[in-house]
Length: 199
Ligand SMILES: *[C@@H]1O[C@H](CO)[C@@H](O)[C@H](O)[C@H]1NC(C)=O
Ligand SMILES: *[C@@H]1O[C@H](CO)[C@@H](O)[C@H](O)[C@H]1NC(C)=O
Ligand SMILES: *[C@@H]1O[C@H](CO)[C@@H](O)[C@H](O)[C@H]1NC(C)=O
Image (tube, rainbow, N blue to C red; front, side, top):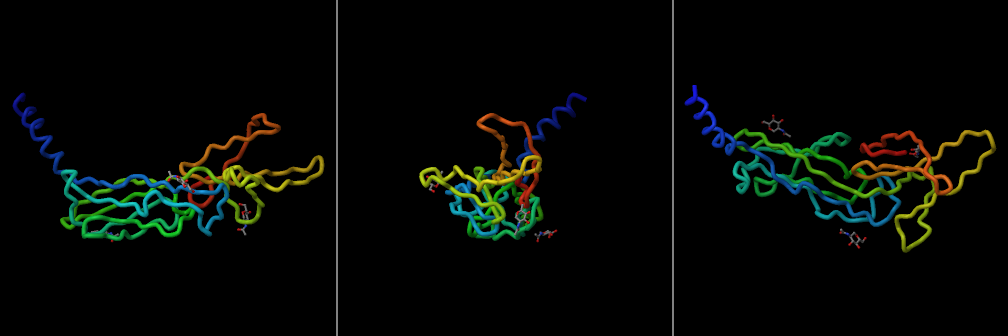
């Protein structure tokens, strides 16, 4: 009995070293340069790197030849066929920055000899306001691009008014409300397309 256990333990590291696993650039930051963005019309800012990439390896050094690869995420478009460069590295190349780029991606690869490897990658962005034109937002101070004011709302006593704080970021933002500089407890959080809240 003792012998059997020893053999199992000894053979374990050998088995582990044959595992195929994913490597990649893990996280990219979308460095947005203004506090207001317009969904679907691009963002002023730059990616810290121009793509997400991943590769499959067994030893942590040699990239294995890939049969195919895709990048997946939980919101539309759900799946992007990867661009494979040099036969062994899968890329998701960014275009013009947009709020749709931020979030969590899964890189899923099948190697030329049929092994599968996958890993998660992330595109982060700080919180900003977004508007589709239904709320007017402005940056009143050119030296502080992330302080935003909305146009005032007029209403009569007894009316019900909904104030919205349309914020977007990845990870999803925490939002606090203040009235006359005092915190108020509230509010409903809605998820906008992209899995980012629109509160
Ligand atoms: C982000 O962009 C601003 C210009 O918009 C630049 O000054 C800043 O250094 C950038 N930050 C990073 C981390 O790249
Ligand atoms: C990759 O190849 C595997 C095995 O041939 C197949 O099942 C899978 O659908 C392919 N994926 C893509 C994105 O083509
Ligand atoms: C803009 O957004 C608001 C709230 O999110 C929505 O009710 C409205 O239909 C949108 N307008 C357009 C033109 O998409």
